[in-house]
Image 1: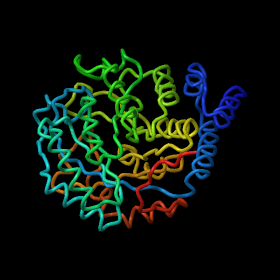
Image 2 (image 1 turned 180 degrees about the horizontal axis):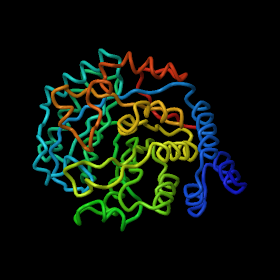
Image 3 (image 1 turned 60 degrees about the vertical axis):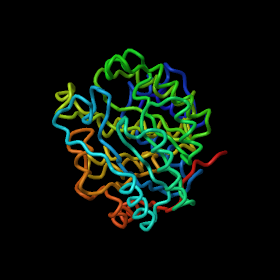
Image 4 (image 1 turned 90 degrees about the horizontal axis):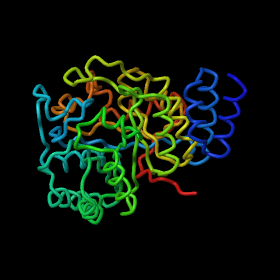
Length: 350
């Protein structure tokens, strides 16, 4: 590791911010020694805020029906091979009830942009979840909606909203999405969500087609400027029924390197170690935690639909990622020195 790289890592650990050019240098010149030093600083920063706790979220994949045709996504509207499903409100409530009994105190309702889930229906669902489990947080990840829609959902009980920005470069965004979807509107959504009082999560894919070190540097600068409560970073994994079927997947090493950097940018951020990491490496989620992550999201969806919510090839859905395997997850986290806790896991403010 050269002296400049070492100096930049120490600067980031102390000041929590670099210039765009410095972020790019940090990425372009990464090496095992730099990754180790970043991880050491990241773990220290996370422990200072959250100790050795890992928060768990119960993920419920409510629908794989989507109106959009994002080029990387296995549930894109044009994929005729995707076996579609939509959970009923009653099924979603049953998932929450089961999750509550297992110890989950945050539920994440994720789905494609399915027009059936109108504001009226989602608000009714939120009110029922909150009435049944008033001590729980509800996170939504339902894509781009209007400010008025986000306002209504917030008033009905939604606490958090996950909306990955995917890439902070407009031209790169256009390469990954159909023409009607723009980075400008995605950022409008994120700003609306933040102004309405949500705990907001953004995030990006690592190794997506056309991604450069300069683009990743822009992502890191966006996180510095936007100051999200959460950030979802996972490796790009191609799906066989998309235009990117033959593209190369992102790597575990770069993803973990970036997890460490994001932790140092925002020491109190809620940072998931994603299912995608566990898909490309059997111990990927543990490695994400050791790089600075502090959230895992086991799957509460009915077993009958897990294989249908296939965003990318070989997405883990055999049970090892399931919420019912919570004891196994606790043992795996304990083996690397971390404790799974069953509370809401809100962001801690300084």
